[in-house]
Image (cartoon, rainbow, N blue to C red; front, side, top):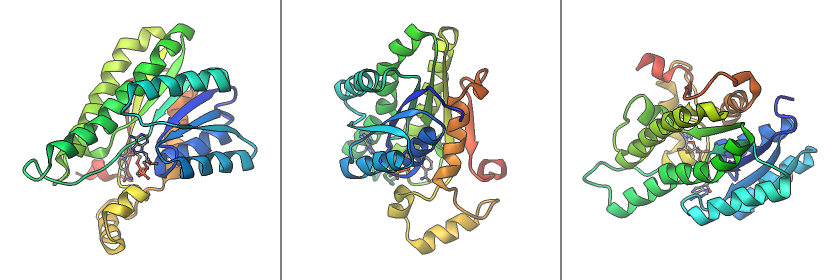
Length: 250
Ligand SMILES: NC(=O)c1ccc[n+]([C@@H]2O[C@H](COP(=O)([O-])OP(=O)(O)OC[C@H]3O[C@@H](n4cnc5c(N)ncnc54)[C@H](O)[C@@H]3O)[C@@H](O)[C@H]2O)c1
């Protein structure tokens, strides 16, 4: 168990990558605060963890709210007994070029993907700095970190922001014992992707990558466990591509 005696706040824990991370962190011994706007599926994540013998609670959190982010952190500390790991998994996707993207969509994508990552990190950092130890794991994307896919200007820009926010926070807090890293998923089989593309489009898309398939959320969770654990004690500011070879080929 790589995360025994650790306490983690996982945002986006109701679905996809965040859910797989919450379940895996708990399986590795961590107590998990599963946070999401989706109460029903978030509570299901908690039930899954408890059924497997793990420790978890749910917190209703919209990451774009500074007040809610602060309360999620306080609740984690009060009810689980501390906070060592933040996994910033909440995210949304919208397609469109700069011509097609409304200001409203642009603002919402930024508010959740970039500002949400900032606000949750900001709420956790003072506690992690005070204890001299912590691991923040952001979720960027191959797109935005390595390249820019077409027709997703707000999403790509938000993930570019997450990439540099990761490095900026890593530099600022390295001497305070807080590590900040990002995983950069390639196309991963989650509701986000399934809602965006038809099954036929998904199959054709997957075949274009070196491994010829989509990633599974559990495969992203393995990378998150590494970054959260002491195995990554000298790793900060890293962008860990978990993409089946996608960026090696581009
Ligand atoms: N699936 C992919 O192919 C892929 C690739 C690269 C990066 N990512 C990134 O991985 C992260 C997780 O995506 P996923 O594919 O698991 O998507 P998903 O839609 O399955 O899960 C996202 C979760 O975030 C939650 N969420 C959305 N807005 C929120 C908010 N304001 N506050 C709190 N929770 C909120 C949703 O309710 C959902 O439970 C996202 O940041 C996404 O951009 C995904």
